[in-house]
Length: 328
Image 1: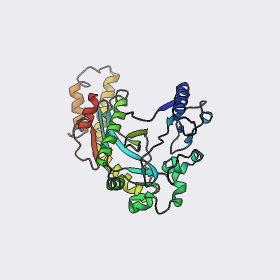
Image 2: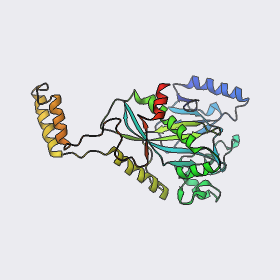
Image 3: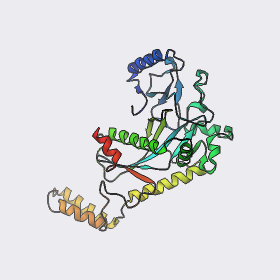
Image 4: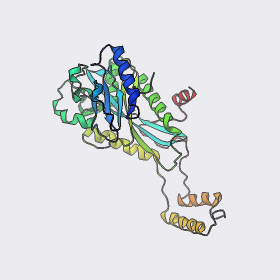
């Protein structure tokens, strides 16, 4: 199965997109249900996103990403939803990553429909919280967010709450979670060779995923700067705990600022005197300088388990799913 729905970057991929659009329309036997979702490049929070089924509505004069709309999403109580997951990457090359076990399921405001007349109704087709926020008051008592009580807020519910409800319907949520981890690992592996090793950095990515009605997991997109805004009590509870767990896992070492300043001055002076190869800048001296700066405490090495992980779960390296996927 694919990693994500058929996706093109326009205008570069316009001819390939037209060929795919035409082919899919012929297979379906009509064009009205040939839905695609178009996203402007460089915007966030759902701005400028639209669903189209007419190739005449597709922009090719400015950069956009256009992706085949998943027409058969897994529904919960008749509502479309996707997942906002948090993945912490502490190294890309070699890869080291952790997934947060609590997350959000983001729901549409009204029940799902593929009626072509509803193609412009963002309440049905888009789950971005910034888009759905203007419709929060329209959600009736049967909406999943209302049913979730304290586990819901805005148009989102806790992933742990959703897992319990799906499990009660006979769905194997452990299998769904495994598919999510596989999806995240595949995505990161695709990028790991293009990003240099940076031992002094980390990043939390927002992975947006969706299940189809056959329980296949699909990647929608990866957000380099996921929103950490807290607009509801649920946001405060989930995001603040995730932020605390992130900092505790990364565990930035304390360092002696005065020793660091002295080392920088000494090494700069040596460089200005073209003494870069003498003992002042050698490997042994560097290691001694680092020990003094870090007051004897060395940073965690790649692959070592963190002292604290909170609700994070390591997905690479050293996990069964990572090893299995790397062998393919």
